[in-house]
View 1: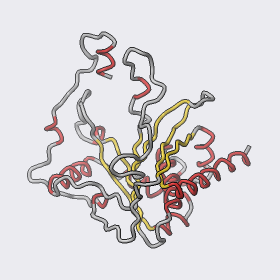
View 2: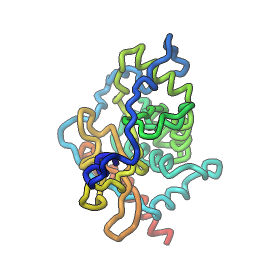
View 3: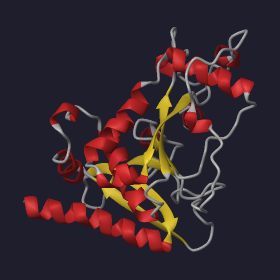
Length: 270
């Protein structure tokens, strides 16, 4: 936003950027009060890390019809779940079915949770940088794939809802004590919600953007692990969420078939 305002001729930004990195310094002495299994070292004993070669990239659109269809599979006690929670649970389950880990292997979902509002006082307006927490849940392939969607949804909700102020400080201090370890990537699916990031409002002087997000899904040092939810308007003018997905080609074929099942359900419900 700041750069956009300057490029459009503003002499100064409407919201001044705030650096103040000391606001997220660890306590002294640091103390870890939560478990953080998202950062455990997990041995890839069965070669289940997604390979770099023969990767397939696809974009999948979820509009009101798709989200409404998914909600029909949600049990009553979870009916107030958010679109992020519902879509994350569904995609995690589909992805696990597609990559076919052994039934007794553990799989992990990690949610990227905005941390600014979790702190008291919250980070100041204009804080210049990312402030998020990774929070996850672990289950077995068998439970995730064989139980109803509500099971995955409950795990996602618990992972997201456990992020509070104390969790944030525990995470900060665990990272300090352990020297900033990387989150585990073995049988892990990490989801980040960009629907409220404000990309649709960015204007560098050429007008509003058509799209704001990664060109491909899950690329980089850990291909196929990270997934982002991006707000878009499709070719028919419908608002929705596009999800870039990166998987090995054989797994992508299975993934597409899983999602086709949702499309057929929508048609049969009309």
